[in-house]
Image (cartoon, rainbow, N blue to C red; front, side, top):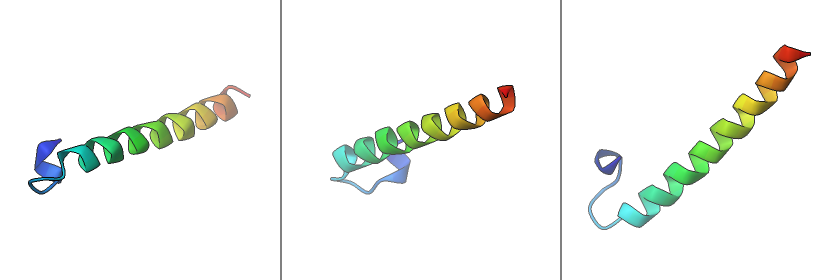
Length: 37
């Protein structure tokens, strides 16, 4: 993940990774619920 953030922004990159992961999980869960009917 370090390649995606410039030097000195490791923490920001980590926060972004967590936020993106949470968003993807929420979207994936919603789609999963919908596909299951």
